[in-house]
Length: 124
Image (cartoon, rainbow, N blue to C red; front, side):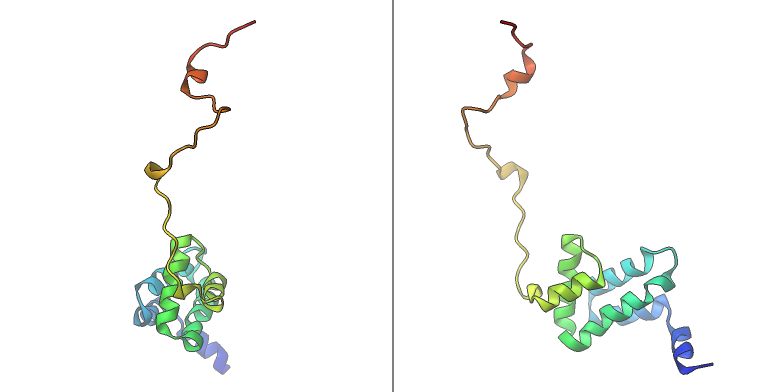
């Protein structure tokens, strides 16, 4: 059997998860997602290899921060993590979302208000 085929036989979801554990919790979470989002875990192996290979280029800390950011923004692909690392977004804090209770609608003369929808329309 060729060496590449033997190496591929050694891959397993457990091996990828263990490797991701050595980097951090966010990386493990993303690797789990890559392995479970497809019908068969084997279909996610290449994405996991690409993701974990980014640790060699950028380091474990940056990869962990990028995985956390990708998870937070809902973009859970290797390509998104690579883009975050390339653009150094992992080194900046995530912008905080404005809470709905903090939002105040500005007053305008053209706002209808609640009575517009409660009262029946008038005919002229």
